[in-house]
Image (cartoon, rainbow, N blue to C red; front, side):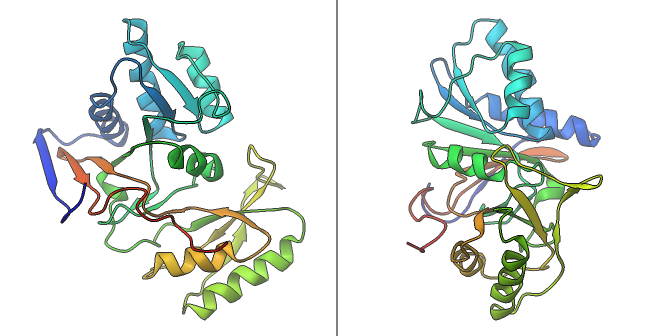
Length: 257
């Protein structure tokens, strides 16, 4: 939707705990799902609440097909009876519903806390619309409080770490860049990659950082989602929809060939 961002409030609710807020955001997103849709289905705790509610609708006759953004999501969908496809079989999607780690007023996102950022971005880019669901704690004025996940090739890891820090430094950003671990072993994504978590603090120019990271050969993808989300549904003491100020997909999130 073009023009200035606008907000719509859907009634007040009582203060709720974190899981209840996720359920309310997921329930509001489900209202955008109609019969026959091809859905991208996100990864993470909020997306899982959406899957559970979606499964109830499917059990009651809703006909959709879903493309999961991770093996974790695929397992949950199969357990609950949500029919699945792949991007090879269904390369164009009507809608993706996913969570986010941070959301700014322009609906630029940080994603990847759950380790699925590459598949999440591929699925979102294949969708006509992307709805982000979250609780109000994820809304920020400027991205960067949450460490930025950067998916990297295991080969040449140390060289890539140095290149990431140098690229950030040229943009005036600094902070620890750490390899994500699971106990004593590096975390491995569904695609077989590692993740660096970059604690840069405030990121005033997300596009410049996106371009700089994409220029590093060892970087597979990063968790800045620019120009992909069309709507954010935020649950707090009321459910709020925030619409993108520019048409999603009007510009890609990097300019590097």
